[in-house]
Length: 379
Length: 260
Image (cartoon, rainbow over all chains, first blue to last red):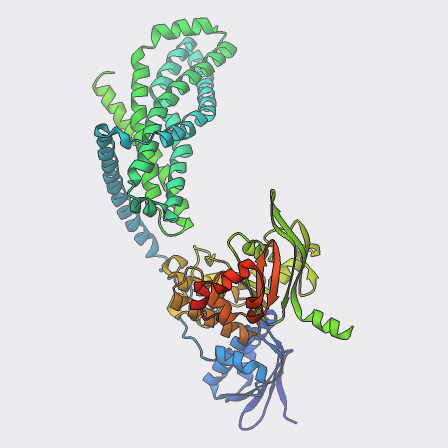
């Protein structure tokens, strides 16, 4: 009786001359794959030079089992010669399906060494950012030409989607915009009065609120909310249309996607953002009045009289004049990123994030430029 | 009695009294269906006749309003979560558009079910994934490509490879040849036929494609009037007297497909 060198539930290695006998036993199926694969190293070690692989003991075989048999044969082959015998008629077809060993090609996407990766990514990010900005500018140019084109053929403006967008980006944003403006107004009076009362100047909190809210905070906060709310929605709407080839279908039907999708959104936002800013200014004042009344005992009537005396109409104008420009930036970023979606749903998410980040960034940059401009013209 | 039992054992999927409805729209009304072990059953029916709904209720994506669905003799409705998890291993599903995970490569897609159900070494999983890729008739350099880089036919094959990842006993195919060109469709038909026969898989196949019915299916089930009109080999189905069946198998496209 030949000596048994190695034994598990699935494999039995018997010594012999000229070669060992490796008997495969039991159910060679996916459930037992890990146990069988784990026994490979020991089996190969137990087989000195070549072996006969006997499959008669196998009671069940699936493709995973067939792959395992092929792996055993390949590994033993490296040490000596492997001969496969006793393959049941039921399993012949299965084994021949698997028998040819596929070359070891990569199954994962390529990975770069850790020290190259950040450098490469930084370079790529820079190139991407610059080219993306250039493309955004050219997109803006394209949209503006189409927009001025509508002056000569006003029929191109699609009123129904525009009104729908006005409802979506304007009317439905009133709740959140109003609430935030109210809270910011209240917080500004609350915090401002604490600091100003140290100088006994707490009444100047009204100047503080009026100037910051009307000039900067009202329009900026509204723009940021709208960018997060509507800019991202524009990207997602247009992006998913792009994924479903709806944009291509539109083009073949002779419709210009800029006219159909971008202009209604752009115009709707340019109409709505100034109105929302005006509304946010009022809500901010209401918040400030409420807080001043509660905290400083300034009656609303007194507040408003003082407010009228110290805050000039210019402050309001400076704020509101920026709104349509911000709106154009948000709408074009949103639509542009939407039209850039291609490939998979992953890209859609990426583009949506990018549209919000980009539009908020550009809004703040533009706001800084406006600040310089208004200082220069003494407004 | 004994023959009755052996017959019972041969039935892999047993649907009894299935009722499905969406709102007022009754899709299935007391539908009965048996799928036998090792056969390829083709389910046909007009658009909106509820083929996909039937498939979705059998694979448990849709809870039927009434009726029982037994797979391998186990009622799907009364199973515990763990049993269901275990039984899921025994099926593979090929969705109409492949439904490959778009953020993973083809090989990673195949490894997803392996990783989910078993703890295998990465090396073995790679080997298995490559074997499945070549089994599905894809060239190996497709293994590290993303689904968006593949053509429609290659995506179908990749999805088939994923469906076969766990060595299922039952394969559900939802319109496997939809959207493929005739050559690609014929090749895919042949692949399904050869692969499932050599692996001994039971196939439940929903299709519109007459060529697939002729070349692949052992039996054909016709869905109409909210129930199974007939479940028989193709020759018998063609003789069946029902206006939809006559029109379907007697039309010009049927003649072109070689249905006499």
